[in-house]
Image 1 (tube, one colour):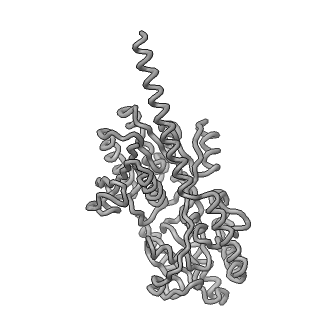
Image 2: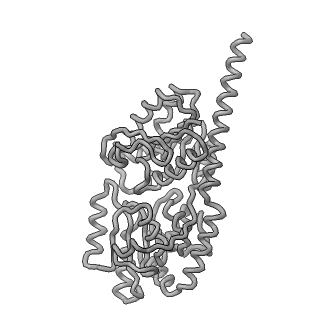
Image 3: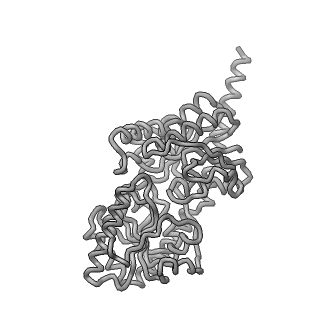
Length: 390
């Protein structure tokens, strides 16, 4: 099959769940022998990079503002795709997927697949108009493509109840990681097991401000047992929020901002942390959360239903979303119980291995592509046959 991915910022992934998803799926599709294309934005992926590990990259410009970056790039990518001979076009996220109707109109033989990863309009960075558009985009994502994939049973139930639309449930995935090297930790003056880590984009709905507040309170009470707090990630059109976080941490040598990290650096920061904290108030199915499971980390997570779906009481401790005091109490509980933290991490890794393997997930996605194409070919054949009979 000739497959194109539209909606992501680019690959290789620097940050962002959509980008991590695209990289993992696209690379595995290419390894399976498919011809794979991924559209990239000039402000994310180097335009000179034309191929990445077997995936062909198509660099196009965008209007690099918070509201127009994704949709302007998606429009150009969609117009470009109309003049190609792709078998499958796979759209990511509800905003970009709103333009999938153009492929349905101008390339009716092409299989159009969209993935509904989260309810983006719930994110606090958007203004009222953007939220209205994203809500409408959600409707289009569920109704227009040949198949809509959802990443959680929560979104599947939602699509059925709100839009009366059948979707295919295929979760995000992760890899099991065994990382021994720790040489990059010295860059931030860290040692194995000496820090708590939070990984993700610095956007208000991710709740990092609650984590910093809780950690500072514990440190003031001398209850951190020497642990540091490491925050991995950058903002994305959220400079004011990033400044707010750094102002909160000012004067605290124990709170470290590493910026966005990838590859071996990110693996080491994950692998050698004491535990992973997920303080978000809104998610789809968090890639960082799944990666923490793959790294055998004890997880302290907000109790939103999207975080609780891949976890259970054996793999995580939950705190009330938005409640820094409850987060503080649960954090000190895990700090004081290292044996339990180790046991939880082992259980999380086993759950990741059993339920969230990328190889299994990509095989399921490949079957969706093949099934849609088979139905389209059958429909076209019937149409031609009917025309001849007349």
